[in-house]
Amino acid sequence: MYDTILVPTDGSEPASRAVEHALDLAEMTDATVHALFVTDSNRANQGAPGISVDELRDSLSSRGRDVTDAVAERGAERGLPVETAVEEGLPEEEISRYADHHDVDLVVMGTHGRTGVDRLMAGSVAEATVRTCSVPVLTV
Picture: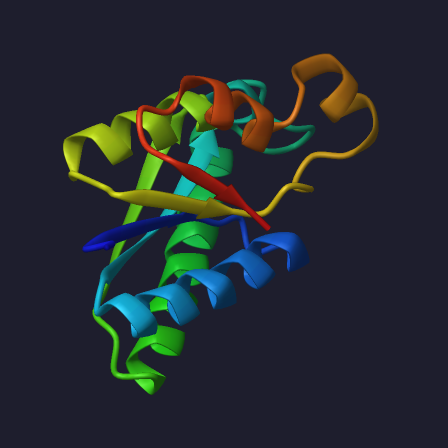
């Protein structure tokens, strides 16, 4: 049914629940999981007080590697293949692009990454992904 499952993650609790669900589905369907962290280019380009844009990008990329490596470790504990990737861009666009370029059959993602003003201003990444992605999106 599913050969390739994409799980975008930011390391948050909702994303972690989605990771577990994606791994469960991969076990049932003998699928490969792709763990994707997207460094939001809007945030990375703004910088922060006392931190250059390059330092912020490096920090976010490092966080992305840590988060996706943790998914790969969880997969390995269960005997599942997990490929990892860290991309930069607008999260919903990068998730959809990645799904198209890697022949993903299903995207599994959490629904509560952004909160407060960020969510009001930008909307939910999950909502945008559901609207724009060319493959089914399972929200957890």
